[in-house]
Amino acid sequence: MGAYKYIQELWRKKQSDVMRFLLRVRCWQYRQLSALHRAPRPTRPDKARRLGYKAKQGYVIYRIRVRRGGRKRPVPKGATYGKPVHHGVNQLKFARSLQSVAEERAGRHCGALRVLNSYWVGEDSTYKFFEVILIDPFHKAIRRNPDTQWITKPVHKHREMRGLTSAG
Image 1 (cartoon, rainbow, N blue to C red):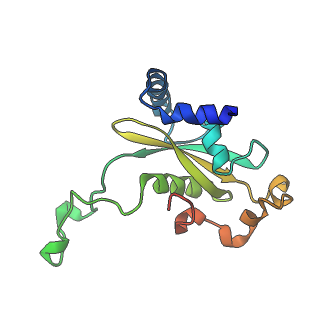
Image 2: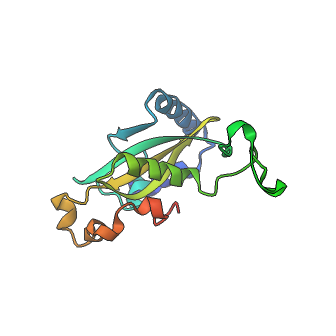
């Protein structure tokens, strides 16, 4: 077993004493930072590599904080119109996952970059934290590599907005 396999096994046992402590400390650290910030390196290198990350120029990691919970319908003073079946305001759930919301926010913030994928890094009672892998489509290291050339094509602009990443 290689190093990444051992890291993967550690992340599978999130209830172990070591991981519980690490996740709690990291969560506190992430809360002090802004809701969207660039991470110097992936928190989970094994997961990032499985999702397509490479430690080379042109790859960027952003950490996103998303507020947990359902979605309240934005209506003025709770006044909904139409049939009673559509009068719900409070107990509605958003159709998309919080992970896809995190990807969308990263894509909006970094308009020139392409969203490749994302993964979970932590959560508390209020927030979920995701790391999003972004690629610079104009970097020569990406454009010249036959394995990554596909993402430089214009059809892959804002994949995250159209549900083309694994988060949906």
